[in-house]
Image (cartoon, rainbow, N blue to C red):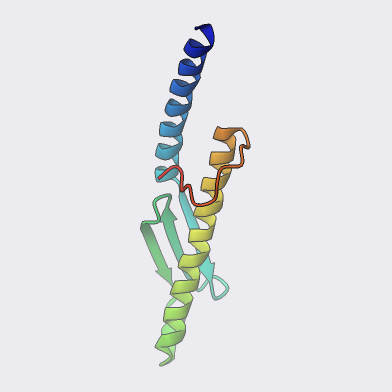
Length: 107
C-alpha cells in the first residue's frame, strides 16, 4: 500500500507541474519573421496572435500576394517556435518519456 500512496503523490505533483506548464505556455510569446524581418508575427502559446508588424516599404508595390505570403510565412515560423517550446517544456515535465505522436499535450 505504500507504493499506492507514493504513486498518488507523484500523480498529484505531475498534475501540478502540468498546470504550471500550461500557464507558462499561455504566457509565453514567440515571434516569427519573414522577408528578412519585413513581417513579424508574435503568437502566445495557444497560437493566438499577440502582434503583427509589417514594414511599410512592402506596400510600395501592387503585389498583395507577396504581402499575404510573407504574413503566412511569418505566422508559420512563429507556430513552429511555439511547437518547439511546448515540446521542450513537455520533455522536461515527462523526464524525456517518448509520448505517442498526436497526444497533443498539454492541450
